[in-house]
Image 1 (tube, helix red, strand yellow):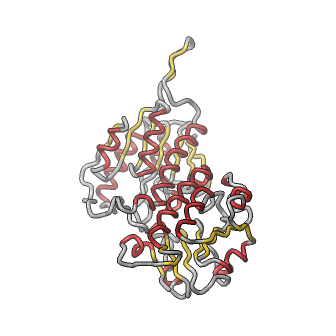
Image 2 (tube, rainbow, N blue to C red; image 1 turned 90 degrees about the horizontal axis):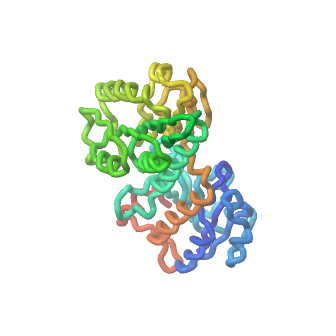
Image 3 (cartoon, helix red, strand yellow; image 1 turned 180 degrees about the vertical axis):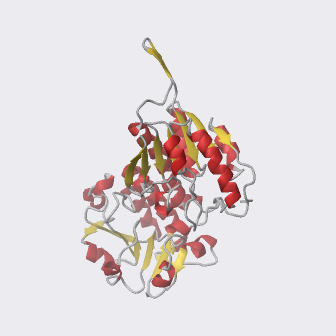
Length: 359
């Protein structure tokens, strides 16, 4: 069986790195990879060819492969070159991409969306959303520090004392927790909002202050995701966010609800009242953003506040992001391949959840 790795058209990352690919040999598979696929992630073609893998043109990879692995979904021109029995593993985001499952069901190939892997203990090693979110949380703080007009730690000098930066983080999921840890390492004072009561202990263990808003909807059955909240709760949350935002220098916004538009937590009124020089990093930009004025992949300036919308920050850390994604894929392939053949056992909850379109 041949597994093909393509060069991403809009990302610097590559879906599998040489170290992980070497382990796929144990599954009884052959690997082919498109020319320059890993170059922007720090992996030369020679890194792949030197360990015995074929580096080919894109059309040849598509035609020869029984399994195609990408981060960004391939387009229709690529699909027509595939074997009808090929499996495509990618990130189709069906919760956001309305109608994609119906569209894929019209094709003869099978499709796996790695963002549909359940967020359970058993599937943890395949959870690409968590892998990428942890990097995004780190990078959000680093980028915010680069744009901020002062510095994070308190410093006492002969010329005077510099107070520590105050950071407010909206959402204590994987990205939020990594943002807390990074901001704390840099010496900031950190306050955190999250609707999930279970997040409080984790937030406090990282040395941040958990800001609680009463009246949140029960989220115990949501599989670790935030759930849609009532408008009354959101109004109370926005009021408290505004109160805290007026004291904050940097806001890292990560709050998203799966399958819904991101909640608006930072209003125009709040932004107009924030300190000039403040920075907002909105990681929820691709689903509408937590902040008024947010536009994905753009930097907006309002009333002296810098608002940066970016939901793909992991791509700025292309080498480590590729390595983590590759390990997630390797672990998924381990449950899909037996003796060199594809075995999509839908009795396996992980495969059943991720397989969004069958042969």
